[in-house]
Length: 207
Image: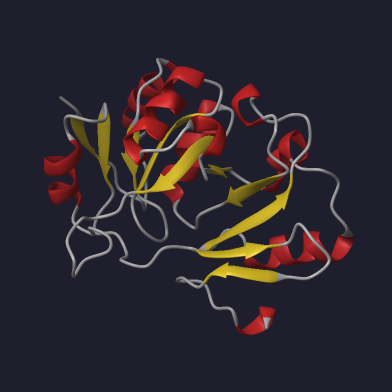
């Protein structure tokens, strides 16, 4: 059964963060807060953990539409092809924030994703998940957790999330109530900017 751990976004406790990082390094699955909805994720260097996430989502890992949560833009060159100045300016302006940017991938992707031409990059405006990624030393795989309820697309209450997910994951981080709107997904991998999904992030500047 998963452990429920409370971390405060204003001042994430180092000992609590270490606990979560230890779970990730040992191949565990966590549910964590972002600046949008709660996410499900694991260490991107652990293929078995990523396969578990894919199984929960009902997809094959090679075809899974996961994004990477990074601490900042310094991780980009590990996974993304060299980008032009305009693209970099867009990323710099809107991140950290409620956006997922689809970018052309390079050969540095984990083996499970080696055939992927693009990758989604997330830098949430949330101090808990960013502190975790920084401590871990590499991005984590990220996917939203949906709710089967017809009225609620996403669950916002961490305790309800824990009740539902405690037998599927290793740790649930209670970082306070989440949002019920996912990130806005914008494809910057081609010459034309394409809005894939309209979410919490404003799209006015991209139209």
